[in-house]
Image (cartoon, rainbow, N blue to C red):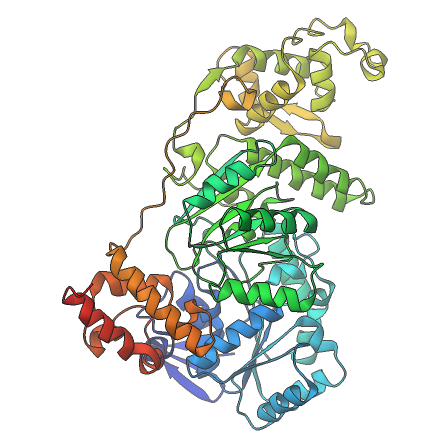
Length: 617
């Protein structure tokens, strides 16, 4: 194992220095410095340490293994779940002058043979493969015959059956440590609860790994959620009109819904395509290609689309139905604003979504996994209806604490009316207390509403003083009040989904605390809304100049047959529009412009920027 000594690390036969690392960082990747946690990750990998890194989408995980891969002896093998993602990453690396290849089912035997020959000749620095490739005949033997610098497991949450995207082929990757006990393994994911994090470590058999966890909070994301009116198409179109010409993803629940909604959006004047697992490979490939090359603006998709998508300029993500877990939701909204510029998310939900999700869980066998799934669904339902900070709720789910976000979610923008439901809350808490905290929400609501069902009669609860004292409230209203009490910490979950009174709840029951709830949750009146706001950008630039730079980027991308964001990211163009570089050195000072990309595209952008600097708009 490598040891730290001054400003040097020993990694294999090569001794590297931080100045060299910074030089390659700028020369190849165009970056002048590291983002949070990147340098620690790079140094851990260079020291031949195992690594588990949990960093939100857009945090720069790829750099943490791509940079050391260029400095270490041998091949870095990257396990990734999606062929389209691998293809895009390999293409982007080649444009930066990096020797990267992939082996996947889209390639012919001849193409795979060419890659294998390059591996044997030492002409590959990064090799991208799908997890099932490891178990193809002869592949492990091939890896044993060449020098491996490290293994990288991308989307590592797929290893854990407690995660939201468990894959059996990922689970089998624990054999890496058996076959290559002295080769470091670096695992990366954007999401992992503490339970999933522990499972990743266990299943991959990581040896005293460096563990890095970034904050889940992304201040460039504006998060909104609102009840769906009807089929939600009116709300969706109103939202999309504010982002006409920008890239975005709209998630639906079913394949049929994706196709119908894509057709509808095209009739409304939006450039849209459907994407789901039921389409042929050719149609999925065409939709994906059109989206990443900015030939369409909107992909209407099921969850089959998006994990790890390498497109940085997605400005919005809309869910037309409630996701099944907060992990899924966070992964999916994470595809917006990966370039660090403002992006917005909208979640449309209804009670029917929750019922539909719950009915699917009924098919699971009894046991801890099913109970865990129900708990996750309950968290997702609570998130939709909650009036607490949405960023804070996501952070809490992943065992992180944060202050309210300010104005980066609808709940913190202060645009809702509230009503006092303290007396109703005390009625519910009294019913809970008088039934000895042995029952769940549904039974207690039945008790308050004076239901005459078998369970009420079985326990003699019709004789209690609280029986029927809440008839004036509908079941839906009572459910909202209970959810609010859960948010306030007045209730806790006991065994078999029973509810327990907490010290906070006891204070409210004694009349020493007030409970207020957003009026729209009780459907008292329509919620007032402020005009939509975007997250303030941290770059001030001329939009007309930015648009001219984007137009040039589009021409270059079309000519080279690559997605526009691979030429330069939106954030890099925004910096150009703000700083107006007119010399080679000034251009190289822009974050995102490396020497390789400058040689390829720099002069065309410099020529345009000189014209724009002289006012030739």
